[in-house]
Image (cartoon, rainbow, N blue to C red; front, top):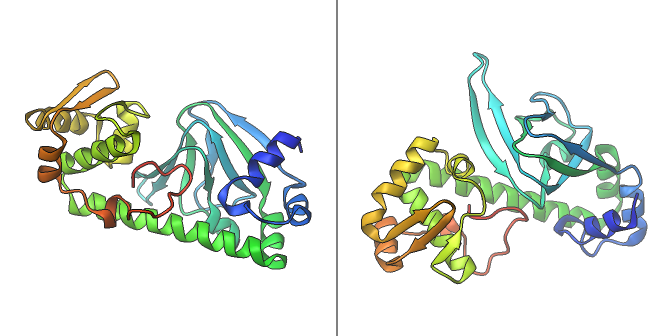
Length: 242
C-alpha cells in the first residue's frame, strides 16, 4: 500500500488515533480502485468484500424492490465510508452502489476490518462512532423527506450552504440534478422550487446562488437543528447538509 494512501486513511474519522500496528494489519490488503461514471460498484443483496472509502467522485446508493422499481437512498460524497454496517455485521448490502461520476476508492478487505475491530478497542470505538453518525444522518434524511415540502427542503439546503460558506452568495457544491437526488426530488421539482423561492430573495445563475433576504428565507423554510444539524455536532465525512 502506498504511503500516501496509508496516511490519508489514517487521518479520517474511523481510523484516527488507532495504533500504527493495528492500521498496518487492517490496511495490508487495501486496494486503490477507480470506476467510470455509470459503473455498478456493488450489488444489492451481496455481502461486501470491502469497506470502500470514497476519496473522489460521488456514489449513488440505490434500493430495488421485487417489482424492479428503484429509489435513491443516499448520495455519498468524499470522504465517506460505504457499506460500513454491512461490513461490520458481515451481512448483505441493503442497497446497490452506482458511480455517478468517475470515482476513486480505497477498498479495505472486510475481514481485515472485522479482525481489527475485534482486537483493537480504539478502532472499535471509532467504528461505533462512525456508524452512529451515519445512522443519525439517515434519520435526518428521513425527517427531511417526510416533514418538508420541496420548497422547504431546497430552502433549508441553501441556508445551510450559506451558513457553512459564510456568504450569502455561493456555488452549489454539486450539479442541480445531484441536489435533486440529495433532497429526494426530481430535477423538475428542484427547478420549480427554485422558482418558488424567488419571491423570498433567491436568485440562481448556473450553479451560483444568491440569497438576498436570508431572514425571510428562514422564516418561510424554518431550518431545524434536529434535521439540519445540531450546533457543534461534528459532521459525518462527506455529509454536506443532512
